Image (cartoon, rainbow, N blue to C red):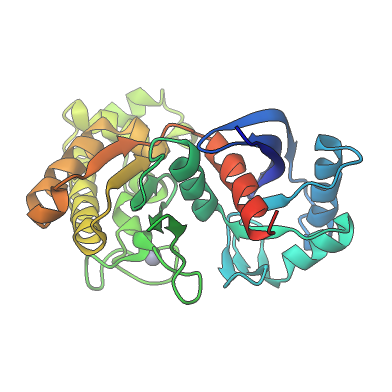
Length: 315
Ligand SMILES: [Zn+2]
């Protein structure tokens, strides 16, 4: 089997993780990895420098393709970050800054895109040409591979599934709009809805430590019969199920891949969502549809970034 090596970087709001990856056809192995905290100084120049140091540590004296996944909205595929709320960046030509530090080209992509690509190339959706991935964590993110290629849309802003509207003038969302599915089913919003007036069941679950409250607690409270938590989880399931049904009706993927902390940690939400999904989806789209759980976890990002870097930089 022909293999090649590349560097994959996962640049989040708090962590910078890098891996030296051996890439084969449908297989990838992490040979080495390093993780750093993004420090207090989050200026693009400082982060670019830290990234260059990390790459040199992972592959001393070598010049391997470098792919970076960043939690940000990008300007097309220009390597410019339009908005990275976690880092406080707006209109930052980050790929160029990283290239200047490293002395070689760097491929910059959206974090969800690289995760989707990782799962489609090496994970649960391996070998499927048409894949829709939906991740429920703090927010709701999604991406798609169509006919074996990452679907980007005209401006690399496609598949913003979390911001599909489900309620006109509904709950306020982090994007500034109202009624987005994320404002109901995103982990942050599930917690927000109960934090103001937590029930006795919830307080017991977190042992009085409200700061430790996460979406899994809300789901567990619902399962224990907490009426308010039940209402919140069931409403989230309804809107998420509707959104998934409409997305599958539109895309007709061969694989619907689901993952993320909320998806894994909230069994009631998950069951409810799939119930609504099956009830609402266009039936022919179920033909040959494989519904699968993401399997690569945190590794999907670095594996996908390394592989996209290798491909897009033409090696
Ligand atoms: Zn939104």
